[in-house]
Length: 347
Length: 198
Image (tube, rainbow over all chains, first blue to last red; front, side, top):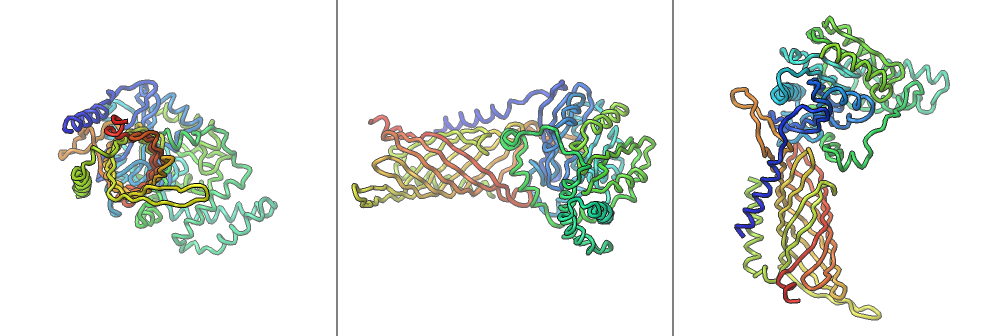
């Protein structure tokens, strides 16, 4: 019996010890974790490591996961040229640990990103170039990272894609945008049946006192509206097949979704109150801002606001006229071209 | 604390088994152990029936006899979710089983109590006390994982059966809440003693 136990133990050890050495190759496909403040945060690295350029992708949500962004033209083109680090934020995706509610804060996630950046340099060398790309909520988190201490100087550039650096501003601008575009659409008798209840709801909102529940409903309407607009191009990109996504990916969409919806209420309320506009002037590194003109989740007014407030001498704003909240999906070609041009300029 | 609890559970199960001369009469199970069906693994276990009874039902043409039992089944499983984590599971199932005596088909319903150690894939980087970054291999976290199980199978010959088992489980105290896990097992149950006699 004891012999059997020893054999099992040794077999398990042998399986665990099969780790490859860290090497920068043209087709990297590896994962590692960072353990910080009681959370184990996964990082999945795909793409061309020989470029020594790493793009860290901060996913949306809160409640999403990094690998749900690994599809389509932009991901393929980025991975051909650079290494992309798809990471899950604490209490989201495949990140795990024994956590308390008070350990789930925006600042804790900023510290996680900081530790990940340092880890990437240790793992792949101090001579690598690092870019941070945040989409949607990832833009909020990325902005919070950029304005904290001197963290931004560890990066070569910051890319904000339809990010939400000021949620109270977002809610007010979203009400304005829905009313403006909605009334135009109704006047043109386009999707009137769908627009009328949305306009009724939004008209009743007091923009001086938008409640937590109302922000949730506005967000849901925002996604719905993008599907109504013919000016927003639909995705033609191939995505993960469902089978691969659910059963063969390093991520686990079932578990990720369940974890994401359990984010503590206090954290969600903190996010809703996050306003970084007055600190964006602290950002001095090269910045690319990419936005969909018809983003009804995070209106382009926030993109203009970010562009106006950031102090960087090298800052660029790109608005995509046929895109909603995800220009990498709606207009992948110009989106990808702008992204690569920016990275090439500052890598 | 949770690990101690499970060690105790498994010890109780094993000691009960030993007292009843289990190894002479009960099967060893070995199975494919698929986390979310497709993350491959292996599970071994055994089963001790601590209550057995027989029930007969009269039908028009024949009498159906079912052997029923309450059982305890300790198991050890290991699986790999590639590039995500490796899981090591110590589990004890407590269940009810009914077997059709004539055909050998059986069903079992059980509740499992498990300890799952989730070993991070690849290297885990941790912050040292001096602010440096250190690497840690075999970094893991252990979670308490209760489960519900449905098993069906058939005894092909005395001492030899195949089975498949569906499990839905939940890691508790995972992040600030729970996770949902599902497992599929397909395997064999072999009673070496009976097999050698047949």
